[in-house]
Length: 486
Ligand code: SAH
Ligand code: SF4
Ligand code: F3S
Image (cartoon, rainbow, N blue to C red; front, side):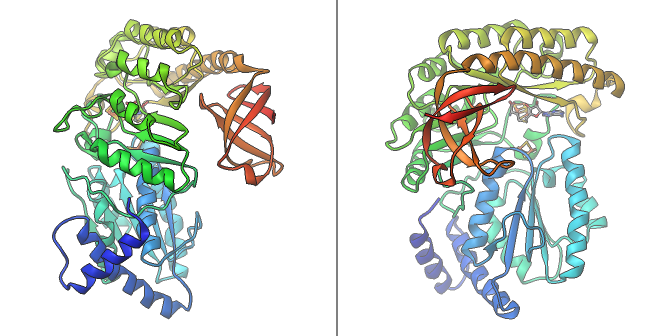
């Protein structure tokens, strides 16, 4: 992140100097200045500012990356058109964690093609995890010729440069890297929310869970330097942010590979000291690396939210082993119950996969048993999706679809039953809520989040957005509450 005035000055300097610098981020400042000229030409031709639209698929990391894309696009002169895909430049930031994510992108691309036929000057870009997957670029080259720009996860920092190349050419521009060690700081960002933000503390993943494509498309684990993270959060807080979400595929292994290793708990202690910051969240915690030190820090913290997302994936030790998760059913349950004991007001949520190769009815019963024992406040349940190139895809004993469906419904039902009683525990209490947005269905209501991540809807005006208010919890509706400001 960089302050706007500083950025503008640097852009002008590097542009004046002539040739593009080799070092980053200076090189990108140079290309931003060039893009600005090209976008100004477009504006003159159109008689209005050209519009852009960044569509995010997938997880919070992608959402953060999209903010970086939008930061550059608006800096060089595009008008942010929100979610309107009838824009002059539309970019899809894709996800490939499950096959249906890929299918959604192909479907939506078809619709974009229709828009482009009506507006031939329209440009279409694709980036994100799906672009790093084997075979995808070949398919796009063959059947989706109308796409103008394709790049991947490792070179997203080069977006300004790629944008210039695209604007200066009629060809399909493709730039995919296999991996990178680079972490480029100080590029512009436009945030979706004024009062809350995500920040990457690490990139990539080294865990290679046998079903998962993320390590292949996001590369090896790299941690950012604590000083860069702290500096970024301090700038965000100055800019109005009161809630920060620290992002990584496995935050518990943060800092292990830094020149001067730092634990995640130590990082949290430093973040806690930032004045003006009210709430700290993080995603995701791998159970195998969750330390007692972290539990201690959370327990005594005033700012770390009472929420832990702790993906279980399966409750069967046999399946966990095949998944390469490095913990047993008992270890998971012990850990979750220890956390509940140490931090009684914490909410624990999880991810579960149903239908992993070789999963039997007995294995599913083990998962259901864990759900009953831990009583998750919420669980995201996914049907196993075969990802080409992962070890699980080559396993022979794939489970028939009908059986998976049946098991899936059973797991879902258990989650709904246990969550309802657990979430409902706070009925009648008054809790602090960060107001996030106007209610989508009812204009007279606003929607906010409790420290433990549970959603609350209550009467209130837009002026409350971004503030912390006390709300009396009147009624529990399964996963969310309705209430009144106190
Ligand atoms: N790094 C995080 C998870 C990132 S992916 C972690 O390990 O906790 C988010 C979730 O998608 C995973 O927790 C898993 O439940 C699910 N997922 C990943 N690969 C999948 C696959 N091939 N099929 C179905 N679900 C999958
Ligand atoms: Fe995928 Fe496992 Fe890494 Fe999470 S920890 S991103 S599930 S490989
Ligand atoms: Fe999807 Fe990539 Fe996130 S595959 S879940 S967008 S890391």
